[in-house]
Image 1 (spheres, rainbow, N blue to C red):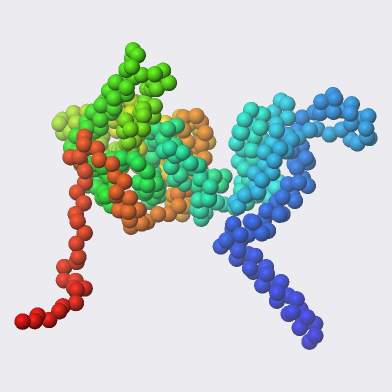
Image 2: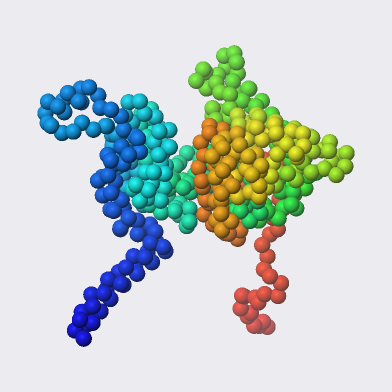
Amino acid sequence: MSELLTLAEVGGPLAAVAGGVAYTRVKAPTVYWSAIGLPITAVRFSATYGSTMDACGLTVAPSRIRVLFTRATSRREIRPVPPKIRRVRPTSTGLRVRLRLAPGQEPADVAASAERLRHAWGVHAVHVSVVKPGVIELRMTGFDVLRKVRMPRRLPAGELMIPVAMRDDGTAFVRDYRAIPHCLTLGATLTGKSVYLRNLITELAKLNVALVGIDCKLGVEQAPFAPRLSALATDPEQASALLDQLVAEMEARYDLIRNHQGIPGSVTDDEITSDIWGLPAKLRPVPIVLIVDEVAQLFIVATRKDEDRRDHMVTQLIRLAQLGRGAGVFVEACGQRFGSELGKGATMLRAQLTGRVVHRVNDKPTAEMGLGDISPEAVLAATQIAPDMPGVAVAGDSSGGWSRIRTPYLSLPDAARICRETAHLTPELPALAAFRPYIPPVTDPVGSPSLVKPSPVTG
């Protein structure tokens, strides 16, 4: 009986601790990683770094000076040299290790062994990024950061830098319009494409930016954001007229830039510019972000008249994508599929959209339309997105770099509320005033009880 009591006294707390650890690992992975996973991984990394690098073929023969010095000072075995550890920094999601590559190595060598390093050190994933020539950073994540997205506390800051999602290496995915002015977003139904747009629109709504929407689904997607929109088109006819006005606005901005250059002589050399960002603040027009929801709707034609209008709209979109960056006009095109079968101009337009975000798609050719000219591995990653992970996407650009991302969930009512709260930031653009969506005034519901206490009439 005493043995059973002793077992209960010892085993009960141990079982409770084990259960608490298991629960924390599933429900609060950040807490589990900080308390348990990080110390274990740090010890494992320190103890096995040299042997792991050697087993992965990431070592080189020591230099002659090193060999002579070792033989002269000790009788230790001369072993191959791994990359030198420059810095180890723990984070709330993993571990970051900065390495100085050995002579003759390149980042691709380490990236090719990332999967083996992941298993050797018992982490969820290992990502390799280049810091500068000869220096790389291993970004290890202790758990799946895309399972439950929590944006980092420290976010990149800058003009028109919009944090939209979380990367699978624990960093924030940022839409930098100054670096990548235009983007194509693809995704099938119920893949999280709308949530991605909500996050993008609500973050842009907090800035001094004019938001222009084209939603040919009669406005059902973008109408909730109307208080913050400077213009909205809900059918192809309105879209065609709106695009004409945007092109006219772009041309007017280039006239402003040309007049400010004042060549010869009226402007100092350091003030000469070729885009709006070099203009004085008092002359600089606000940036315009055009968001086209379901871009394929602009290509669908039924009659000859529709075909002429389609060609005109596509031409205007191409002009905005080709010339808009310098005038501060940016294009976000979204859809389920975007290929040459849409008609004339589709391929040319797609070529102007540098950024690519592809959610789960229904077929491989659609993934190739968005990511085929970036990386074959990115296409494969897009086709492997699980249906139970809405919001997961593959983001890339023309440089060939890509990563898996996931946007935090944002409901439509919350997004609409943010747009109402930031409605006072909506800039007035006279050229687009005719397309400004009508916002009915807020009135009390019919038949609601009066809050004014009646007072008796006295004679």
